[in-house]
Image 1 (tube, rainbow, N blue to C red):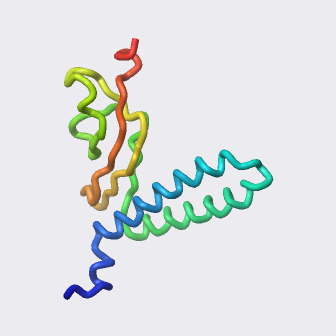
Image 2 (cartoon, rainbow, N blue to C red):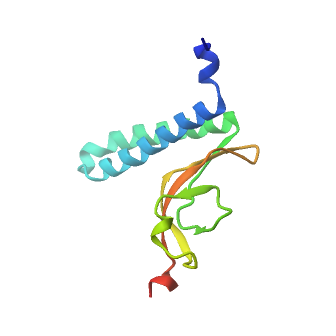
Length: 125
């Protein structure tokens, strides 16, 4: 039987935790935008504090969370595109939305990110 403390410190496990918090933060920001200013002010403050705490902890771990939004999508990008198969191979693509950030440490990918892509503006026209 594995020691649960040892398992909790695996880089992949910690990276997963960071990604899950990142996703929760993004969803919470969207929900806060729908609230009246009088109700959202305190929640925005709490979320901003928690986001800063995550950034500090990620930095202490030597991790980096990478959001590829608006980047040109190519084979060397350390992320996978959920909808890349919707476009012809020769189509120039850009990342339209990051679903999960890539987690890196010491120039190595700990956890591959997930994105959605769309044709670049020149391809859309």
